[in-house]
Structures are given as structure tokens and as C-alpha cells.
Length: 201
Image (cartoon, rainbow, N blue to C red; front, top):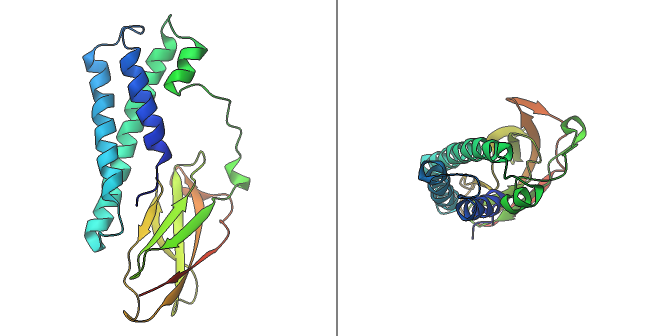
């Protein structure tokens, strides 16, 4: 089962409220249709990232999800900026749209991600993480035969699916994971606490 993605929850609220308040802000179909299309696309792309996909198919699914997320964020931010500049805008309407909130004072240089891993058997592990205000996380992993942690992937939306096959198909193995925030293509802050997952055949 795919974890409920915070982006989907927020984007569903934004889409529904934008459609309901379109007249208030003088929005037309050309303004709202991209948001509706983004919502459909991001739902499809997040759903496509699942433990049943392996190899290059899974890698492409993650890349497609990240592209869809970036497009959705870009369109939503641009429309939110227009709405906030409209004379009819109020804090109450902003809260309804999900574009009002307290200023985030998170200092990424002293922060670390929260990481959790769940074995899906057969070498597949679902890793859930929070990205806070960062662009995403770099995920590192270590298993039998690795002298130290090795870079596994960069992801911008939880969950990440590690679908590498077991080293020995019939033998359980322990995998260790850790993650660090990424901002403007550079790692920032502290590494997460290490997570150990016992992968069953």
C-alpha cells in the first residue's frame, strides 16, 4: 500500500478550493485547468511508484513522480502568488486554499531527516522520510559486503522504494539506511538516525 503523500493531501485541498473560489478571484478555465491536470498527474505518478516495479521501470517511475511534483509545485505557487495579490484575498481564504501558515524558521544546517524503513520481502524496502523545507534527501545504504555506506538515490517525495534484489535470493539480509537533506543540489545539515531493516526472502 502506498503511503498517503502530504503533497497529495495539500494539492487535493488546493485544487478543490481553487475551483470553488474561482469566481472570487476572477479565475477562468485557463487558470484552473493546469491545477486540475497536475492533480490527476501527480496522483497517477505517485501511485506508479510501488514495490511491484523493479529495475529501470522503478527508476523511471521515481523520476516521473519527481517531474510531476515539480510541475505541480510550480503551477500552484504561481497561481497562489496571483491569488494573494488579488483585492478579494483574505487570510481566511488563504487558509482554505492551504497557502497561509506560520513562517517556517527551520534551520536546515542543524536539522536531520526522520527516516523509517519497512520490509516488503524479496529485497524490496519502502523508505519513508520527511523533507522539511529542503528540496529532497540523499539516501545512503549499507549491506553485507559494503565497507561503508554507499549513495543509493536522491528523492524529492516520500516514499522511496529500494528494490535491489537480495544478495542471495533465499537468504535474509540486513540493510542499513541513512539520509541527509539536499538544498540547491548540495547536502545540508545532519544525517538521520540510521535505520536497520531485516529483509526477508
